[in-house]
Image (tube, rainbow over all chains, first blue to last red; front, side, top):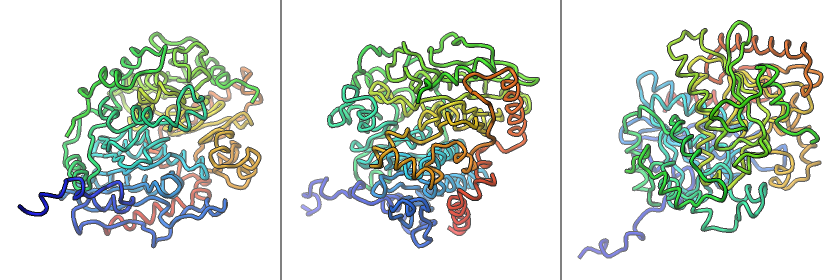
Length: 290
Length: 277
């Protein structure tokens, strides 16, 4: 008996979540095909943070990598959750928008270029407030411009989650891929507790948070497309499948009537039970599980 | 803040459409009406407070699930009806913006408010790229997710030059708590750091605004005020029809060249490196 077969599977697997944003993005590409654009050596950092006594980072927490995935052109844009909570500022926002726009330009010229957004972010960087909010609006617009030409895949893997304005960018993506550990929502639990009170949302209730925002729930209710294990190889395979997928005739965020009816049918007299909602909405209309 | 959020939105919706009624099938928080502007018809949209909304967290003028899908539904209908029309025949869309924020609620999160907001932003952007002039008229507050859902995909943004206008990522009290500052410190920083300012004249320095509009009292407009704003809207519609349907104009404005210098430089560097990668 070979030795490898005796090692439990979870020991031999390569955790994706334990990688930083740069390595996560790199790990999606075919070996030797990728290159980072406007990397740390280009020294393009936020002009607004030093004015407030905050150390900027040479990549502004946003990593852009272009290369091939499954032999097809692709660009991955990763927000690094470890820098300022993955928040969007002027520079990181411009990197994202520009990368999406050049992918659109190439796609329109016949070189279909998929984009993968690795979102570990709390949303707008409050130290750059209005430029961050404007950047989010522009990212959403650029995702929508690329989507008819090439897949735009949002991957949410780590525990920072994807919150704030960037959750709208996830919402307009062609596909959303999540791990069980990942979370997706507009307002984080702490923000709701602060704004609407602890009766509305108890941010210390971890079970509640995962029941509402967690990857399993989002995929289960059809608001995300694939649930993947925290395994770099498995994640790469799922992403590659979406990069190579045919374009869809209609995307989830265009299915307004379906969701309007679903909201109209909700009983709002008390809090909504996530599990029953998942059963009610299911995952049959839009999400394809892979 | 003495004035209730949404009053200005309702006032201007009524002034421009001569209508103050909710359309059939819509929640009491959404106003949608077609009305004449210049020599054509336009779709006007607004989100207003409704103290008896069945969603408690939108009662003060926040944008929630029903609001987002109702807006998206009106926009999708107009896009479909005008699909075959020539670009200069597509009806303009005027988003009157006076929203407190997005809804901060558990019901909303459970049912996926991120996605509802995305569906509305998608519909606004789709109208714009289809060739509808999409104009946002910021009449009062335009905060964070509320603005992203309703108005920020417009290809021309107009705002009153008035101290009651607030365009921002987060309201002062919350932003102060999260960045561990006092409100006074935050206001001081806003004077020094343009993107953090709560003043609409500072917002205009970011190059995101098509025009600042002058009205003496936005809550009580005179007939002459309404006529003047109509002309400003007609001018913005004409300008939008002549321009690109993406958001590139937001980086091209003279003000943007100054204030968004870093973003513009990043874009140029990325373009140069993109080719050779």
